[in-house]
Image (cartoon, rainbow, N blue to C red; front, side, top):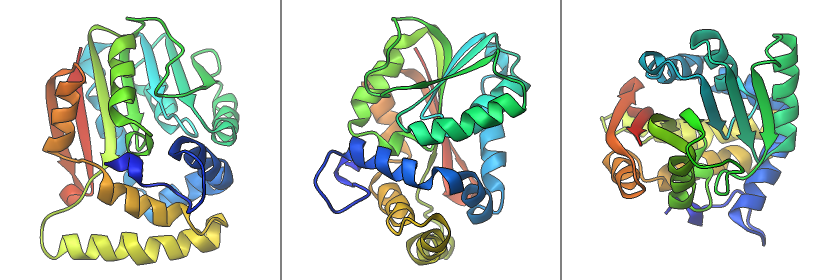
Length: 242
């Protein structure tokens, strides 16, 4: 399971280590995302957000919001009344808040420091919930999903964007080589954290992607669950309803 993979070879829970890792790489996170994905990550986010368009959600929770990329994109595309972005890394939220202030979205987007597996919200609060590249970092995946199901309103929609494992030859082999060797080498030089982008590969390999994750969504109370692979399976969009 994904919770067995930790960023660092040291004592401490996965949650604490993930917090430390994102605090370390926060200043470089946005640049590395654009550079290492050749900008494709922005397209993935837009495709995920598009799944919420017909729901016209007014109150949205963005779990593992990081530097608020998804929250900002939703504020532009979905015209919500309120977006709350929650993350365990204060340094990532600080970067995100600067972007929100610069784009004058502070009246719509509110960032909160918090634990995705113990959400500080009442039952049936949100019309929609998004998670982009965050669920594989959960210490207990099912606990996090159950919490999201709890705070989602009836008929509310969950959209999860996450890396997955390609299966098509030779793309699978090229993907694994890039993620296992090239990406960590670049990340080590630019982010000053030698483990962060090696952990990225390890966590993607350990994550129960595809139909396995769809089954977990069903187990944790979601229905009408779907998986849509993107870019030859590098990434997948998962969706479900309460």
